[in-house]
Amino acid sequence: MCRTMVISAFAVGLLTAPIAASPLDTSLRPSLRPEMQNTGMTVATPVQARADSAGFAAWRASFEPRARAAGISQATLAAAFAEITIEPEVIRLDRNQSEFNRTLWEYLDSAVSDHRINSGRTSAQRHRETLASIERRYGVEAEIVAAIWGLESAFGAVRGDTHIPSALATLAYDGRRREFFEQQLIAALRILQSGDTTPARMRGSWAGAMGHTQFMPTSYLDHAVDFTGDGRRDIWGDDPTDALASTANYLREFGWTTGQPWGLEVTLPSGFDFAQSGERTKRNVGHWNAMGVRLSDGQMIPDHGQSSILLPAGAQGVALVIFDNFHVIERYNPADAYVIAVGHLADRISGGGAFRAGWPRGDRALSRAEREELQRRLTRAGFSTDGIDGVIGPNTIDALRRYQASRGLVADGYASPAILQRLR
Image (cartoon, rainbow, N blue to C red; front, side, top):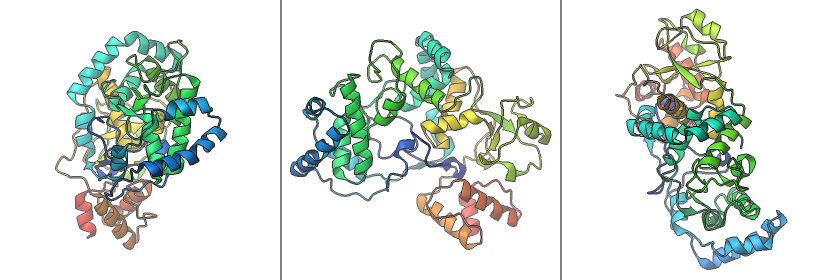
């Protein structure tokens, strides 16, 4: 997988919920996984699902030669396709992707709730020897692995029960993102051909993510490991060991630094130059300490390498100093809200406290239409956002900061309802 798109939804005080979650899909993944970015996906209006068996049979007849050309044996195809059925519900979910916005703090209220923290501590204690062994092997702290597990499947309680080959075949047949889902289906067939699992056991979410930590098939092929040594990379069973180790291996392969925090809460001095905040501005910690930035307990920021100041809700909310490990977690899911949730849940599981600063809870999330309006109005005012896409990323934040500075406002780049009203 590669990070193909930066989603800084937290910067506007919102995040977009998982695409069309099914009733049983209670993972807290706030955006598409990286491998599902830039695939021509759009939010569609509701349509009648095309679920005719003749069309599906025709797609299957055309797909099988492509699968064989990719190295899938006829025996594997026969075994997998013996259980494949078209799934009208999968098409319905894929087509009915209504927008659902929550502010970052509303998301964290759920993602890092007392119940999830307690469940995380219980699960980490239950699997402490396994997590310790994984940490020694891959250098990824146990609490980080546990936090991803908690957000992806509620510590294994909700792994998804959709038959993955059927879901992927249905989505490939439907045709809206055929190339992507055929790629995932061929990867799933390779997994079956390797003997890691069976068609009946290959279950997960309706969009193809699998197991305790919700790997897409291509990510599984690239990063899954057999930590138990039983000859299979089993991320689907009740034993989470291979899934947890695979997640740690994934993070390690994308550059995880042992002992480095993902981020730390800080307080900003009076007169702080907000133009220096944001992921694009990296400084050594000596720079921030010299400016008067301090940890939330008043201590100096420890030196963990290059860092940035992040303002998830502008000047009125929590301020963070983030390090390179923040960006490694982004490779697992590029939504910054997800990264903050993983990091904060990990901190809470290991005994850390809640954020000390508050959130602007009087604010609401901007709708997609309002975010697009914000971008249009900024651009018309001479502060180009380099496109109108409804995503408040670095370009829009920079444009908003320049607008705020030109009007004598706090230039924190926070896209609130109030700033949109001012632009109007």
